[in-house]
Amino acid sequence: MRKLHEFNLALFGKWCWRMLVAKEGLWHRVLKTSYGEEGGSLKEIGRDCSLWWRMLSRIRGGVGLGEGSWFYNNVRRVVGGVGTTFFWTNNWVGGVPLRERFPRLFDLAVDRWVSVEDMVRQGWEDGGSSCVWRRRLFAWEEECVRECYVLLHDIVLQEHLSDR
Image (cartoon, rainbow, N blue to C red; front, side, top):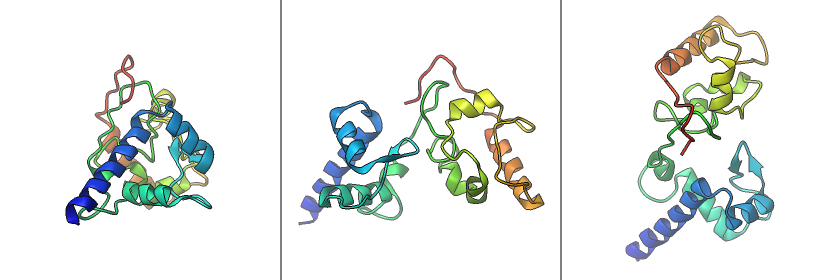
């Protein structure tokens, strides 16, 4: 019974992988139409969703093997310089999405679905215009911004490479 459970998790993991790498595929377009999209990713659980979609969403959320989000903990996003990697929500720097590492900044960001490419273009270095906040930041929030800039300081993107 355990092997059947692990086999099913592996199949669901394969579907999760397909949704990451084949966004122009027929199944991705069908799921996008059925359940919607938010911030470049398919919505986790929509109204009137199928049992298959609920299970798939649970796998993407970490249910299954061990602790935490086993699927996303084992997927790494490589950012080139051209692509659709989302600055706040994708796991592309530091091992966790920036929205989890800096939840207060994510809450205060005007554009929560900005891409890494757009942030680079707008200038994410200290003093750049890339981050626009809903209100003026408190001193402790400004310290979070500085910590975020330190994390991003040594990132160099390759303009000729696409995200993968």
